[in-house]
Length: 117
Length: 114
Image 1 (cartoon, each protein chain N blue to C red):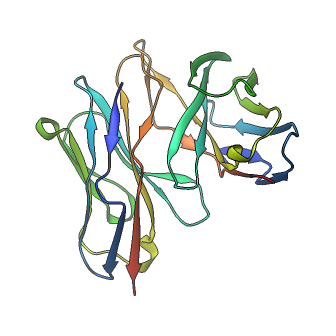
Image 2: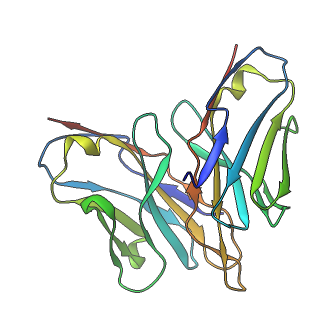
């Protein structure tokens, strides 16, 4: 069984369109993340949700809006897509351990390769 | 904010050669340390992690890493690489206590020549 799944795996679209990427985890984790991996393979955190609450919101254009309907899902909606949005987007999840908010290992999904034409 | 440096951008080795990939982080507090591997076209998989205890940690596929606190380093090693180890390797750090953020290094591409 897939622990962290993302759909779609590939997404090709025109500039200006709006698109969504979905992520689901079946690990029972309480924290989920979105990362962007650029063409040079650099991974950067975009957002993180803990128990459906936004806890990390890095400097990301407000065209990107995450939505967490429940602890097992974290979707990413992108408005008015631009060429520079082309990248691989990875979802991840982890479990907070203890009272100090220490997070355990993050488990990654297979990625969504977004190409904006 | 913490940062992670991986010194080697691309490493090319012959099969059976020994591997050491450098990773240094900048953060004065206590941290959790990770090495992830990304095989071509695949997602990131955890190789090994260090939270506490023995600073020499062993991971999957014969990899190990040593945490040297005084040097802020967490270098990855393997005594004998195989062609199937060809991949991108990422070092990552997150602060203990209240940080959800995992900061990645820029990755090291390993190419193993048969």
